Length: 361
Figure 1 (cartoon, rainbow, N blue to C red):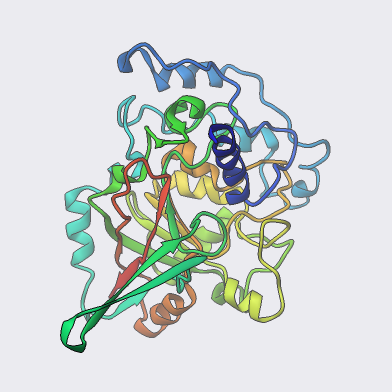
Figure 2 (cartoon, one colour; figure 1 turned 90 degrees about the vertical axis):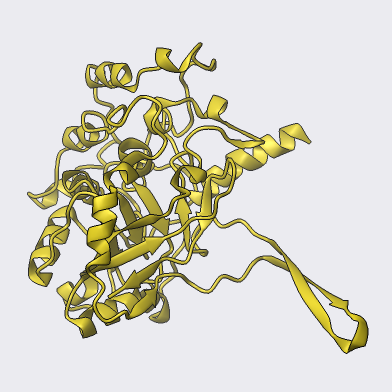
């Protein structure tokens, strides 16, 4: 039983990321297997120093060549540096488990509340249909009764709207803060960077960037991913500023893409390119919400082109958000900033949580 549960954990991590790793970079932890002797003996800042002096690993042979057709595309070395030299490991303390959510101060949340004017509320969650739902009716005397139900589901993946905890993913250098996932994540759950680190809720200013409206197209298309400089252009065109601690919601038109016959899954797909990671770090975003995720294939051969903001920068990820209604509401309201609320369940040792994020105007 124990070995099968370990296989389940490994398989689930790979499946949630969308399948096999791209390129030649390792996706599994290859560092030391032992837990540090004491919390103060583990230093993310020391790890960063070592990584900064390490030779830059090349991507898949020839994979970055096509990216250089656009002079704005970075070199493979520049991309690598975003996820090594600019990590947030140790920024809020070596044992921090909140990551960039630390940027959402009480003052930041209070300022977000002042964005509420009309009280209009828009959900960014898709309808949740559990894989298993068992119903039990219980009769009561006098003809009354009650019903209860059991849900069985895996929310990670490409269907359920959910928030990824910082422990959810990692690469060869480790998970958030450089921790060893073989130590911190067991068949009993996550013991570092779990979802209950955000149990007070994520309440901040939300900013939606509408890529299809800016492009004049119904949705983002394969082979033309969203780029970081494009997000800058969209923010300027919409008259909105992405500030530290904001929740950034990038609308790419997934539902329009699917209605047009496109298939959105774990293989090749439209979405966000790795240059969006630089935009996220430059603006100190606290949460990224998206309807389309990492564009594939990635020209640099990265396993997690944009998902890497989770374990490198500590940015919470709101996966599979339903952003089409919110994009319509923003256009009708004439503004793209609002109060944003995401309240994950307080799941002990959980790697994430289903969520019903709300934007309030």
